[in-house]
Image (cartoon, rainbow, N blue to C red; front, side, top):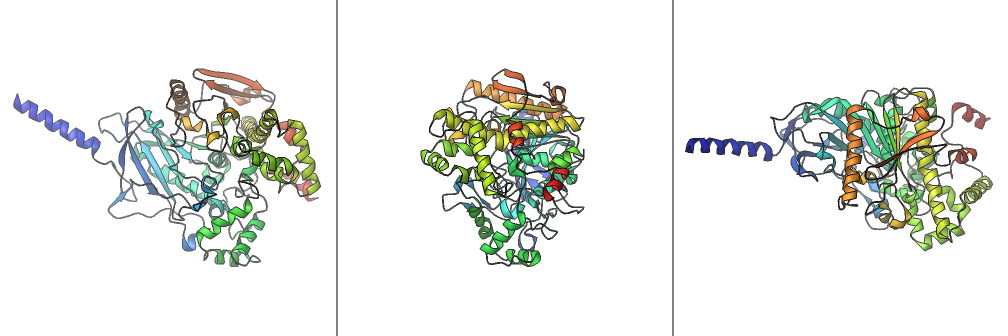
Length: 559
């Protein structure tokens, strides 16, 4: 009897060691050591932070395309988060820490429930790769964690990528073609394909996802020849390639400006870049301040460009041409938006009377920056006419509560919703894979508009939905029963889509030319909806803002 008890105790002891000894994974690069964490539902999962996927882009590698990370000797400590990529952050812009982070930042994180016990079902798990937002300028892979998602059998990977001028500067030629931040993401996806099986993941079932600039990044991966075959489905939250802030104009002028600010020549691309490689990284990133003429606007002065022809070109043409020429990856898509998307950056305006007054008094001057048509409409008279048309169409009176709400509506439509609706229709029209669309209209206990300077009464903000899927210290979506139920439903939606590559929902193609979406209004309240258009698309098209042009339009413009 005693021997039986003793044997049982020994077995229990080793079982505990198996679970609570730090998890390790053997890769071609070397051995990784992570740590255990606990999900919101009390489940144990493995976490590996700060795993190198590319060589540090420092010294001569600054402004170059990434190269795969080399290996290491011994065991790599993957228990500490990597620093964020060097950035000029909206969240710290008025503090001494406006510029922070590190150039040595190309690391990723893996969260997996598969390594807890060797006796469990070893079926490879579906993989979700998440790309963080931040207007291609700020935030990092660890702004969110996996503790909500890890209640389910799925693996999450998130990565840092170069931001601002270090990730998206372009000389407009083959010296620095541009899009290096996107090429970082491609390198991370290649790492996932090569290594995720060691974490219990299925490299043939990878869904890429992202929010805001991360959502736009996902859509660009669908368009890019470099990303083909690296994923099987895509989720774009509050961002697509047809949003105006995702595609950059005047890229050479911006490069010249940075060079002149830092005492570098700008007449020759090679001389410019060689000089900039010898300037401190924080000085380069700090020049971003001068490209944001009002508050933190325009939404993103650094974004993607169509590159010169090259085998390594991430984006060989404008998004609209790639879509219509059927050159994008034909994979299932889930596109999403919130009811009042424009609360980023609109809450910072609506919540502060001094900002509203300044916008009212400088309307024709500031609106082109706020709504991102300053560089696509060259004539000042024409800009003023467009600004007045927008004011009249949306009935914007900044002295009234209703008029401020109309401003948020205009910002929502222009910056996010009309582009998302147009992308959904084009993907649905030109490709065979299903396209799904949802709007998040649920107002939980908290809203992200408070983070941006506004109040809950302003509506369902940009970023409100992602907080129910990935946890952030910024907003707690687990305090009320209703919030927890909505969180479960959104997680179910993600996990089901990652597993099956389809949803029990309306497919966009079936309603064309109208637009079908599911309106998520609350717990157990997903309402099928069909509208003529999203985001007043026809009005914005009528303004002829000369952006993201098709080839025929570009030719007419040149003439």
